[in-house]
Image (tube, rainbow, N blue to C red; front, top):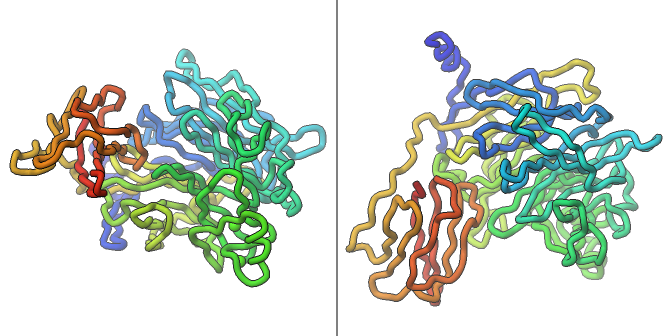
Length: 450
Ligand SMILES: [Ca+2]
Ligand SMILES: [Ca+2]
């Protein structure tokens, strides 16, 4: 045991970047393009590999189990098994959603399937197709999946056919939105269609945070983009690249085009994305965190107070792990990255890995009990079932409150009354509690649910 510990220490490299010291270590190696990594509620990393395998790794030991092999997956250029999403109520609702390419007759095709996790046998199965007939190609297949409440968002690529993104009858070059059983939501912008927004080239990053759906998209020879997705809107491709300028302006005005909130020329090959808001790395809080496949760097895109523009770009260029395909975050603030360096054809090369970035000196803050002298008070804190919130010189009744988790996701919100707020629905952990007075004054405090 002592020897293993020593080896682990030697395998770690401590790096300081942007006044943020972190350690990087390998969690699991010898993988074939882990395209999607998800930090599960069981404190394991669930991931796809491009050749059709779904696996689960224990992040401390690296012990890895293969849970499923979609044997009809065909790896071809950028295609194969790509994005995955876990049901928000997993494992009580034991579903995973996965995108992969296969041959349908002679046509390279992408589909979205639902898999069921069976604890007895510790495996995935009962594959059910919930969306089919997305065109596949050697390049531009998307395909990131993300669940917001009870809806599945899917990014599809243009499959190297530039006529598809502006054709609202095609499901390629789009952000799609479907119910978790594959049916079309009644409130989609086009009746009976999964199309939520259009005009995308190849979106490979997607995260919902701050009540917004953020995506990252690969541009052609210019203009990788970060977009905030709105229903029924046009994101421009192939007529518009990046911001609306020059000869693009007329089309932008006529065609309901939304400009990106950020664009890169030269391109960086923007990939998987998550929202970082954990106190482990204060300098990176409030940022979209994104891997890149060309720069081989980790990007933190710091958002403004309204969360709708990028005010600072922090580039971590000291990792030396090659192409970064995807990112995820554990509830304790650690960052996990997956690489994308194996040869796409899959001829035996398995040189990819999942790594962890963390601050070994970080100690989770024990939240002190609020003193009576403080005008804004929450008690008890730490709390089990409920909290009472008071302001010394004001009634809190009628004020808006919201509680966000360590990922910045709003988990509870509403209007204050003079009654306590129940925390029974929340898992144990650290949260930020915020109320906003009718004058717009904000009071924020960390709370610990035990
Ligand atoms: Ca665009
Ligand atoms: Ca442009």
